[in-house]
Amino acid sequence: MAQRDYVEKDYYRILGVAKDATQSDIAKAYRRLARENHPDAKPGDAAAESRFKEVSEAYSVLSNADKRKEYDEVRRLVGTGAFGGGGPGGFSGGFPGGGVAGGFDLGDIFGQVFRNGGNGAGGGFGTPRQTRRAARPRGRDLETTMTLSFADAMAGVTTTLRVSGQATCRTCSGSGAAPGTSPVTCPVCSGSGVVASNQGLFSFSEPCDACGGTGRQIPTPCPTCHGTGTEDRPREIRARIPAGVKDGARIRLAGRGEGAPAGGEPGDLFVNVKVEPHPLFGRRGDDLTLTVPITYGEAVLGTRLTVPTLDGPVTLRVPPGTPSGKTLRVRGRGAPAGRGRGDLLVTVELAVPRNLTKTQRKALEAYAALEDGDALRERFAPYLDAAPVGGDQGV
Ligand SMILES: [Zn+2]
Ligand SMILES: [Zn+2]
Image (cartoon, rainbow, N blue to C red; front, side, top):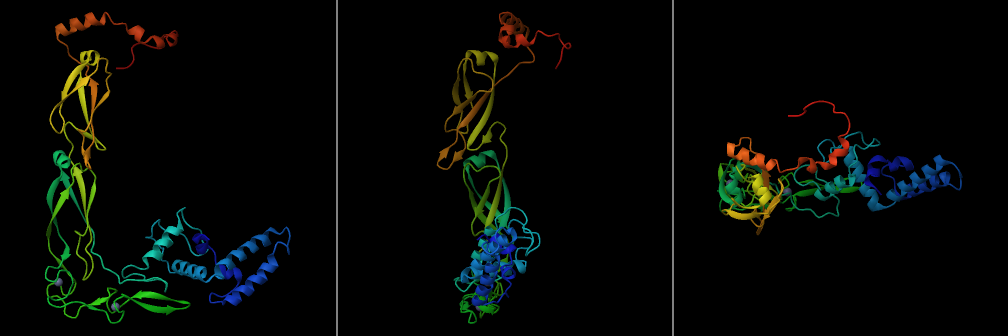
């Protein structure tokens, strides 16, 4: 049964029973409606047939205790607007009975809500079957940007990042308890962080007020942080940026974000890496790219080219008859990638000179006289019979 149906269909109304109807009431209502609308009783009546299907579907959910419980929870969440606005996929449109916006999977959202069961202070909710732990407060994630030279990005660097904001309290190491004392288990919730509250058919878990959902109490608060476990101080964080890091990479330093309230875990620090461009080398994945101009003579006759790499010059052979734009691969001279290296992709580009010396011009004219451009463009000939449409075009 799709949970989308749970949102859109009021099974209680379909069966004409109250929300707290007993199993026997539900069964009675179903039997009556099924009899009235059965295809055997009303052959050829399409409306009755669809009503019969609707009634059967409603009964299949409400007659099953587990399914009914899930249905009720979904309807309750929708009714309380638990999906208003911020949820993944951006829920909008009227519930219940209204259309569902977009084509996203409701199952994802419900799956999330059921799994999280109200992590943190907000909206505690769960079924008695679920085992729950005290909410562990978490520090905020921090984000910073660093710019690396191309060379540093290739080699990898260890750097110091300056971060401000809430940090784990140094006096109590984040426990919130004065030195020499310890937090104690909350007597109200026995450390679970939640208390049960009975509402209607089954019980919900709510965050414990006595301990704020942490499951712990602090009899003697730390004098520095007054029990919060964090203090506002700038910090310096050593971060190792791996060799071969790409421009736009986002590196996560687990636990290096803001400190959490007493007993919690710190957030993460995200480092957004920018890499300055290199005057010669480009980058394509783990490969480096390099464009090398060559002369017409070098392209036609072939040559040996000495080109720079990250590790020093290498010489590569350009075979005779190499066309402009041809890419030659120098293996293992690209960016560091894990344990290996990418390749260096050398693209040769035919340089056409704009200015020639007298001697060059003479030599080239002599050579050009031996060339046959018309033969080169032979396949155009059949299309050149018609009358010309104008004089010189183009630049
Ligand atoms: Zn402290
Ligand atoms: Zn408690």
